[in-house]
Length: 501
Image 1 (tube, rainbow, N blue to C red):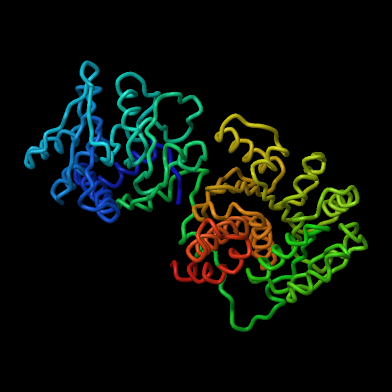
Image 2 (image 1 turned 180 degrees about the vertical axis):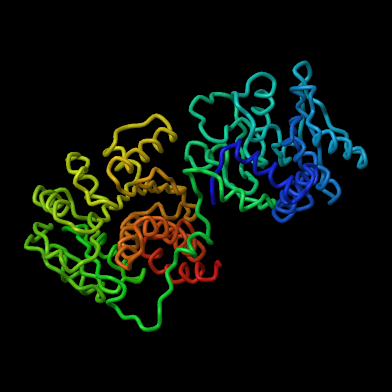
């Protein structure tokens, strides 16, 4: 899914109105009805709602929602924040329609904005939409501060939040539990710092012209089941293990052989044809006992990796989980970077070693994939003051070093050597557990070995990893999930993607 700017979204609205064709007020009705359908599915009739509307089209959405809720038998109050006497045409139409239900709004102004709402009322935020360009202050800020004490559902975007860059936005913002956003997610929703305002977001398809949206120029994308499913390669009948690559994993050290096991199991479970796992002497019996499908390669080092096997027979190499920071291991990583003829997948201690030897970054094989968590990325590039700056650093890193960088976390971002950004939409907090990153390394390495383009391996790998985490959540809850559960959930995740198109 393309992530568009506020201007591009307004253009998509206009294009749809002209070419469907549909009137703007009917498009508003359709969008608000989608919101009402979601509310009716998630809230019982004994809930009461307080709908807060601005006087623009976002407020018009709120008025339609209020009307539909009232007709359905919910208790509804409507508050209009009259920050301007210039009402949008569609807002005025829907304000007039409220009279049919004898639903009289309370108008709040600079001079009179005292209000009282029921303690347990669900607040619908339809004050400001995508067009907001300055921080909220004054009486509107006071009202938002008051309604933030209630459970809030924001319509399209939480009032006070800009669509893209909020670095200079110090105004009051709605703190929503849910955001019901139209057609496509907004860039601001991808940043962790905005979670307290956005909450859990849901995309509602309101029928904007998909061809127009797909044709818009953007560097930002949000991944969907359909996107991931289309990347999934079919397996022809007359293939064999040699058809699906031979991966090498350089993993493990004394006390960290669990990382080697997890990465190896995930690599195999993702479909690689052959896997060789290179480990220190102490780790080989563990590997061959726990992961019998992997071929073991023994390093000369007793407790950590001190040498490289012959690299010529492998078409991809993953390195990092559990290898430690010993000097000899660092030298081996340098040797690997200098001699590898294929893209590498680098994670964990491989990234920590690189952060202490930044000159090596220039020698990384093109199209390699790095998978840091935020602290590992900070060691590579330095500190940042905002999520927007962090994303710029990530894009610049991929551009400069011609690599794919997977910055792990909620809405994991994947940057490409062309500066594009893909945001993941799968996964859950249960995946915040030791070994989850090692599983991702195995998945991405496996996909690369099978012949996926590095961008597809990174994007599909992250999506599949999160989807398996979501399956594991259903079976184990977020509280009891461990990394092995993610591996065991990969078959169901693959099955889901196969059915997605």
